[in-house]
Amino acid sequence: MSLRTVEAIIEAHGPKIRRDLEIPKAEYARRWAVLQRALRERGYDLAYACGSELDRSDIAWLAGVRDPIIERYGILVPAAGKPVVVAGSEGGHVVEEGVRSSGAEVAVLREYQISDEDYRHARFARLEDVVGRLLRPKPGRPVRTAVLSSGQFIPHDHVLMLQGRFGADNVVFEPGLLRRIKYEKSSAELRLIGLANAVADAAFLGMLAVLRPGVRELEVAAAGDYIMKRLGAGRTGFPTIVSSGERGRTVLGPATNRVIRKGEWVSLGLSPTLNGYHGIMRRTVKAGADWDFPESQFMAALSGLYHAVFTATVETARRAGPSNDIDRRGQAYLEDLRLRDRRGRFAAPREPYTFIHNTGCSECQEGFGAVTPETAEPLGRNVALMIDIAFLGFDDEGELVFPVEYAVIEDSFWKRGREVGVYNRLPLVVQDFLGREVVDVPEARVHPYFRPLAGRPSPRPKNRADTSKRRTK
Image (cartoon, rainbow, N blue to C red; front, side, top):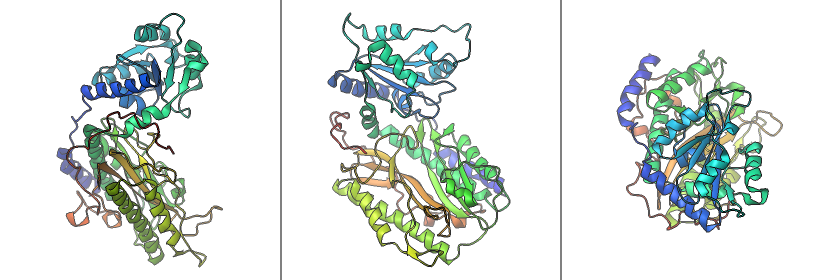
């Protein structure tokens, strides 16, 4: 029955997914122009960003390279002219395929090859020659370089390489420069993220259909992964999450061969990547049993926190208020929340992280845009964000004091001007979908904040990079 349901889900949702929707070359050219203008204003000749299978957002956004393989790679963006993606000889083949969408150039450098390999027929360029072709530097004049990647991601060797070529004083970390430019989304980006979330909804219905006591976590994940690929999502923002029982404490634990037992709580999550952009769907359910009263109270409190945070988001967007008002509203809800725990005390469950974070060419590693107590500026004009509401059921000592190890509701939403809407159609509570042939969300159960993406985007600032005075996290 469940396998038939999986195929029925694919048949029902396939026609809704525009797999041919891509970022056009003209948009990449506009992105380069905005970044290059910002570089010139700050006195830089060159910008550098690096990437890998873990941190692929920057170069996906700049050059369309969204499927890196094996080796690290980088991009050199001159203050004027066409960028060059630098890669190793194996990953370079995939990079060459990726840059067709943007028109960026590619150079294969020995510095990026797998360290212990010998590529006998590879033709390597020299970094000095690539930079010389991009900049034509004047003798005696240093090349001032902005490093756009976070120090958390860029390899030490890359920093030493740049400093050795240009001098340590001329290599400056400026990760916030690109992050703030990427924060504002184009119309095409917002549509692609919407499609990725439509894939997420469909794949999640498949996972719910096959989840029952006696199946392995990986079997549940396989249904979601299969549907995602069948609907055009080539990779994922994170390994598909199925964590049952005490594995819920992993929060983001990928599926394993563990057998799901009756009465266990199961945390589910997936993040399909459609043509470079990410969707999300995460919920927590109980396998093969109804919720008892304490569990119902716990899960109702989680939904209540979601409502508090999202209604605050809508109100803050309408009045262009400071985004940390959203965080304050969520914290106020938690301060007033009192649930009886297993020790007979009244307390609020712990929430583990920020309620809202940015998304785009990564699921959550955009580096800017999270709503925290310190983010006093308003939300961006045209943005896509994720609302991630969660409770931990255990205390600082690891004792389970509430009935669920970890419970989560995570969705994606768009903002255009003062309008806000959730991309996802699945309701906040999906317990009654378990093991059922639910091919699509019934209209009566559609997410309370679901709204189709609004019309045209709001006007952008004249200079999208002119956000350097905003406070960061």
